[in-house]
Amino acid sequence: IEDVMLNILQNQADSPAFRFAAQWAKVVVLSQTPSPLVLAVRVPTELRGINCLQDFPEKTSMYMDLDALRQQAEDIFATLCTLLVKPPSGVWGVEPLRSLMQCIGSIARQRPACCESALRAFRQLLESPA
Image (tube, rainbow, N blue to C red; front, top):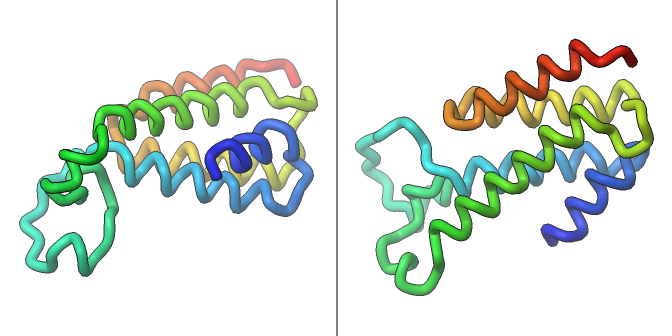
C-alpha cells in the first residue's frame, strides 16, 4: 500500500486519489510517531484503536520494530515536505496543494517534532518565485 500511495503522491497530482493518498500519509505518520501528550486512558488500546506509537500494546514490541515504524513515518513526512517545495510537474494545482498543505499542517500541529520541518517547507514555498 505504501508504494502505491507514495506513487500517487509523487506522480498523480491531478488524480482524484491524490487527496486520499495525502490523508493516508497523515494517518500513517500520526499513528507511527509518538504523541507528546501522556493521557490516562480508561479504554484499552484493543478497543479504541491505535492513534500513536504509544498505543501499540506491549506484546507487539516483541514482534514489530517500533523504531522502524517511527523511521518510516519520518521518511513519509520528509517526502511530503519535499513534494510541497518541489512539485513533480513544476507547479501545483489548487486542490492538490490544499490537500498537501492540510496534511502537513495537521501533522505539524499534532507532532511538534515535525513542526520545524513543516515551517521550513512552508517558508520555502512562500519564497519560491512560482
